[in-house]
Image (cartoon, rainbow, N blue to C red; front, side, top):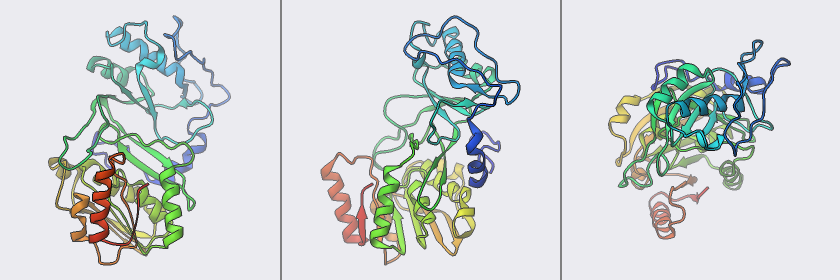
Length: 341
């Protein structure tokens, strides 16, 4: 797929991603790497070059290079611990038993400290770095349609990456642009997916609605479980777009034959927050999937009359009054079983 961020071939199908997982971050017999103390600055020694046999390098060596570039550009004083350089997000992300050896262009760096000059150097000089994102307060996305959206800043490279989430029916691959969508990293068992699978067992739904879809993880898991009709929605443009994209990424594992996009990335970006639901994509086959961008409180206007199960994965779960208000309105207008993952 043509990447909407960098124009490259960053997005590949799920089968290809899953086939590469077993050896993706494993060292070859010739790989060597030092383990660094993350609570101290890196020692004053030369870092190892990528392995001449497989091209991979141990993550601590890569992070030492990142740290030194940031220190050289004045983003770090050189006295901070190695961990102060930022947060590494590997591509693809999945539960690993040991620290990874990174192939080229497999790491997106999230950092509060990094500047533009260092970011450009990191993408040019550190072969493992895929993209560099400067973080800020809060997390990317929106809490409500009336709230100010939050986003981080992509400084260099491309920040499109994937996470792999296991389900009982098989894994799903979820791509996202990391500067505009929050981190949702798999650590073996995803509690939201487990919650969804319990609800599917309980209700055996013909139709499932994920009203706050994010990048589409729950909708994909429901489709992977065989739910005949899945409807996903999010008011944030990036969430709606990547949900639609991820249907195509995983289509081989779903009962769909074609995916039709009804809005482009640029179309959605021009209206980052939507209230009235707009159809973004449809997928048809033995299963049906629809993706909307809109306020979940107005989604009832485009939903079919029989909804068996809905997930309301609200940002503000700790606001009891708001949760009760939204779930109460959903029961009255949509009906069916509701759960909050």
